[in-house]
Amino acid sequence: MRQFLRRQRYLIDYSLSALARRPGKHLALLLVYTLVVFLLASVMLFTQSLRREAALVLAQSPEIILQRQIAGRHDLMPAEYLDRIGRIRGVSAKYGRLWGYFYDPAVRANYTLMVPPPGSPAHGEPAPGDIVIGAGIARTRGLEVGDYLSLRSARGEPFAFRVAALLPHSTELVSTDLMLLGADDFRRFFAFPADRFTDIVLQVRNPREVRKVAEKLSLALPDTRPILREEILRTYDAVFGWRQGLVFVLMGGMVLAFVIFAWDRAAGLSGEERREIGILKSIGWETGDVLRMKFWEGAILSLTAFFLGYLLAYAHVFYLSAALFEPVLKGWAVLYPDFRPIPFVDGIQVATLFFFTVFPYTVATIVPIWRTAVTDPDAVMR
Image (cartoon, rainbow, N blue to C red; front, side, top):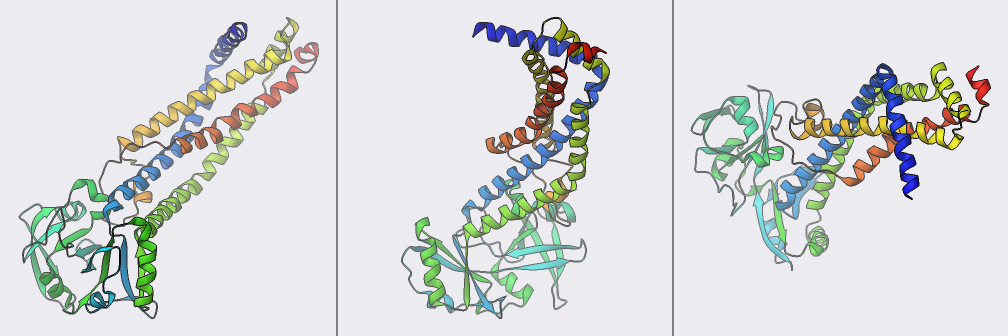
């Protein structure tokens, strides 16, 4: 075993010296290789971080949201439906929610207006005339606590709300366009009927009973549609996965160009490299030694590019907030959330990226080397 390790060390030393003899050629390949790994790793890290951030933020969301459907469209929920639901075993709380969308022509962005749920730990229901806004609205409109935000309702009536507080920065991924206000202000602003809610929310004690409760709701209120929290999480995951795939498709041409470049580099041995192999064979090197030496040469190059690209991607995502891909992956048209992703590395994604970037190039270097190594040394040198 010791002799085997010593032999591999000598082969690695020779491979390093061979790389140093042709620095320009190998540096060009290293730079392109590192760039490809950097771009792919940046997209994977940022998308995975967004998924994790969304899961953490939505962990406290209600287990079931009940919406009324008319002709396949979302309709307002009558307040009497709270009584019709009755007492369902396992449900710890139920209440009607008030929320809606408002388009602000001043910044050409949509706001989400919402009345805080009962017993909200972060912000209770604001006082009449007060609002609590997300950081994106504050940045876009240049607002601070104590300022007034003027809006015009759908009926043309002017409203002036005082900014009582800003929502926490840690929730900006889902609250950047959110505006919290009191129930009376909400109903006056939207001319919302007093006996209607936007939807009904139910809290379930046991997570294993959520689907059973949803089935009971569908039977009791056939014109409603229960939406589970796990379905919302799957939707977020699908959206981020779709956006990740979109970026990968846009980068497909560059990746294909790199594959062609790497294959040409691996398959097209120069005359100098062929003579080097012929000399090594003539002085007693075996074919296996030549293959192992070239294997280490390709492995050193590909591993260096992989680790450099991955470290640069880590810094790009978690220290620079993925500035290159932020607009595509976040997806907001105007109000972009400004937050620093939580550092998170998925071992399976690292292994997948490693396999599809390091393994193919390392293997590709073996085929042309083997063809040359099995040829007669005299014929190779000639």
